[in-house]
Image (cartoon, rainbow, N blue to C red; front, side):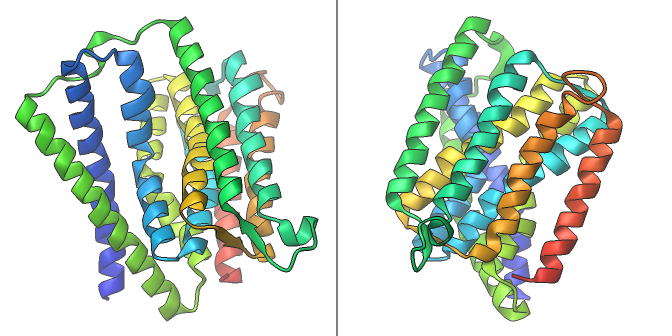
Length: 319
């Protein structure tokens, strides 16, 4: 029971801590006269990815590397099939040309790059497959290019509204930052410990726990943001949030995780890699079926159905 307690209590602690950190750091940055644009591209963007990053770092330090890759791949699949699927079910998603031809292909590229890096045994006939520290460094380099691209897009679009970030008192900002950091560490430690314990008791692999419970749990901020954006008919936010999260996960979080500790890969995980690549291809295909550059309700429902089928398959596989 302790393992279940650690996992399911650790998740809300992790998510709330990320919110506190973002709120406190954003407020402090505003007090230091940092522009809203820079805050959005740094504090907020990194803060919303903090749950996945902390789980990755803790799992890497503790040697639970299978959990790292499972969390990343599972989150990326959930972001497209589950999160965008639910958002499109709420309200059809109109996708801008820039996202169609740049961000979505970049998300697809990140999935293909991960699959190639992880398949040393299959491609080079090596005795074992691993996402090495060099691979991780390359992924981080990709991420720096993406940040530069994002900065250019944001700059061209102008500064975001001044009221976007609330300015708190200096003491309150500091308390939020400290509590957020402590909560992230505590929540990440509990999640990893609980997940590993459950996997061992049920005879399930760490990767399976990462692909399912942890992947969906750490993606809850993206789920809430995208579905609420769809309710408000802010489809740009819904799509950009999910696709941007995928790129962050693949290039930044997996890159950092591999640099901390090389991540071993079992070829049985190629089914998950294929689903991740296929989800990106499917999303791109949606934009040219029926009304161009639009994800309709039936496509969203179909995506959620595919995600449920995927979950059933990997649970039955239990590896």
